[in-house]
Length: 99
Ligand SMILES: [Zn+2]
Ligand SMILES: [Zn+2]
Image (cartoon, rainbow, N blue to C red; front, side, top):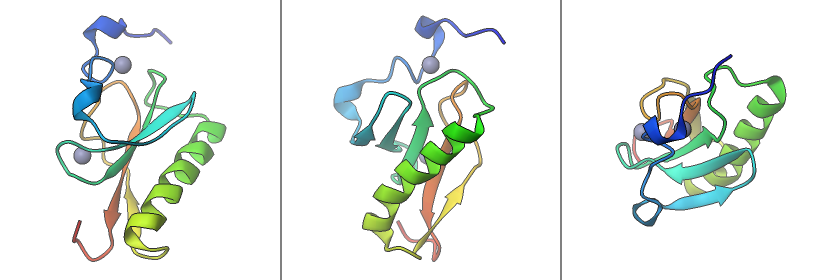
């Protein structure tokens, strides 16, 4: 599997001052999506195919934030890829459609 050059990646070039970070760890970040205005977990690694360990880490990092924002049963994961091409990412959206 070949890795993209970081300089060609809009997500790696993201202006961190303009982005709200909910949590950061060596594998992933949870940020507020600048387009959808909802929490989104983004894998740091360039892949669209996370390992099972990475999937668990993504769900647990996103849950920690989304449970706080929406309430424990108030949200769902949207796995549609909308931003950050090259990095798998999942949005947390309110089940009732509100942000
Ligand atoms: Zn990148
Ligand atoms: Zn978004």
